[in-house]
Length: 313
Image 1 (cartoon, helix red, strand yellow):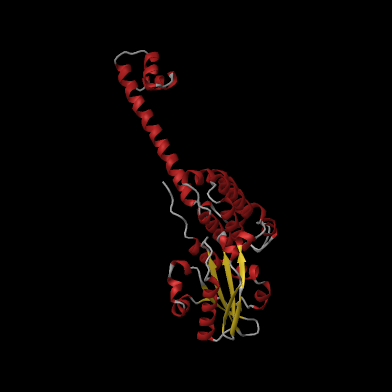
Image 2: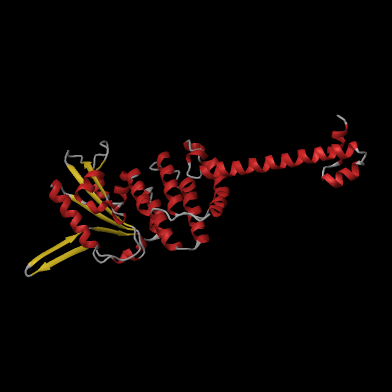
């Protein structure tokens, strides 16, 4: 069965929400140092929809507006636009500016704006919007992060768990439609998450679960290939997951383990049913006076199994 294409917008939105502190540390460590994370971030989804109605559309579903508490007691607003479309958009910088001035006009708060560019050609998008008309000039600059331009080696050296999410995005672009390459990338990331990264205290159990889910869905594979991946990952999860209380049921592969167990049960049940049927045929043949050799040839049962049927008779 062919799987539907993953909803990249929603996947990025979810992982940013789940690992927001790590997300901010990764993209803006200086700002992150000023934030008091003892106060939970407030995700202003409804406010964003009210001031940017187009954020309800498919190409703006991943926009986020977050209110944070700084260590000095002040508030800081974070606007994140995630551009996951592969096509270059000429008016993208204009939309970034429109979002900025609407948030500024509505809330009158300082805004940190970031465009996470997850598409291949999105790396050509500039980080500024320029307007000029008969002496009236305006230049708006914002932060951009094109995943396609990032270094794999740099991401691999990072101890921030969000780097694995970015690396997954990079691997999606690098593998394109090559299923085997995507399989190898996915296996590599999941092994890293459990075996290589487990030593860092920054990666908590819930982060591992969230990243497992994100990587599993953003690097979606055909069912038969995912089942192969399950077979390779199962002993690793069973071994490495015990130390953090992570069980097979906690992972996004749980459905495959259940499916695998169900298929094994069906095969076992089928085999038992076939054997029972063979035994019934063997008993009828023995009652007709057939020899053990002939019964064995007909039913496929061993001589010992047939002899065990004779005793009750």
